[in-house]
Image 1 (tube, rainbow, N blue to C red):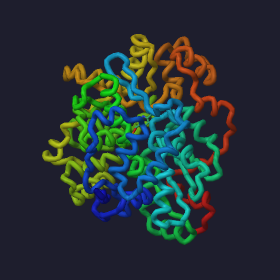
Image 2 (cartoon, helix red, strand yellow):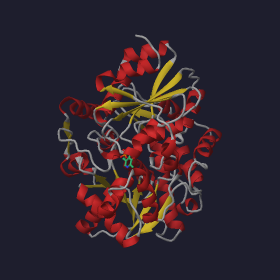
Image 3 (cartoon, rainbow, N blue to C red):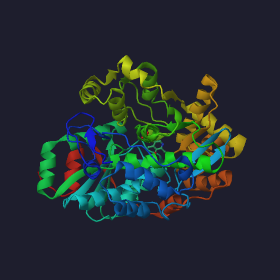
Image 4 (cartoon, helix red, strand yellow):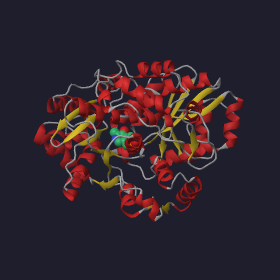
Length: 498
Ligand SMILES: *Cc1c(COP(=O)(O)O)cnc(C)c1O
């Protein structure tokens, strides 16, 4: 089956997967979605025997149908190799009453590595297939983890430049240090005076600016995106939900065909959307539990049908979820509107106009798959401490948001379906908040470096390579810019004059 992509806002359709990967965002500002949802057509029993790479191939080959088998296998084998610190690539661990799907065994110890280690290969392969010979400039807004993972993936990849924008006061110390020490002549990092939403909107505006696109083209460049708006990020993420389901069968946690629930700590709605797509492919995922932190715009949306970004923005201990405009929700909106691009376009116009929209009752009925709730900072801290006390397992604050929301869900519904919690970051990435939750008096006064050693003792998990790397690495990036100067900064970096 040949799967083509269409923009959620109706301006483009019949786009091949490789073109969609290259473009990132559709020219009308919409997001690419598959025109038809492929089915898995491989039995659960067979999947249970496959390793991660094989499952990734089974999933991706059904979405990225204009890539040859050889091309896809090359991308998969190049991405999912020794860069990951376990041969399984992702790990499923039962702790307390849920399974934690550890997605943080890649180079930057957050789940973004699962997709961003393969995106550069998908993109350069797409460029070759489509005879694109301009240099690809990846623009990326980051709430902390995407930027590093994208740079690690694209560093020194021929034919690419990557520019990352992060909110100056909105990322953890480890996240910032990981970014400003990034190696690679083609990597560029800009701290902006604003929050993640400002950065993301800025990037989207630059993408949508036809004059800038023309100017770049004249100089031999074209923009693309490594954010989860790129279908090349979303599709690889579907693979690990399939892998988790297959592993549960393989290890006897469930029988083939049994339903499971999935809990996802959510920001931009990319990760949970991948679980939703897996469900559409035919996997028996019962509830998709959308866990938010104090920036609970999605919780309110699932409860009321109104998405409203007009509210206070909180900086929390789970910075990668400090987001008020969840870009990928647009793909869900399109789906529940019955693939109605005009309706989607209207709602998105309302969002950028007065900051809110309300879905119709018909659309709300399509949301029964989802449950939304949020954990405040006290609940997150309590979750980290109580999980540690009960099991010795140490959660990072993002995963703890999910754990806390799962507890709320169980209490509210009594549902004891087997549940997988997407574990999105290593606790090392947020050592200070984690140790503070476990025992503030004992650990708060330690220096950053001492904290890593303490965490090693507390968790029994060896300090990951990603942390060892940043201990000594020199700072290579120090640009700071205002939001309104983002475009100017890009042109300066690329040495383009207007
Ligand atoms: C990006 C990120 C999230 C949020 O994922 P979305 O796909 O944006 O919803 C959650 N946790 C961590 C650690 C992240 O890096």
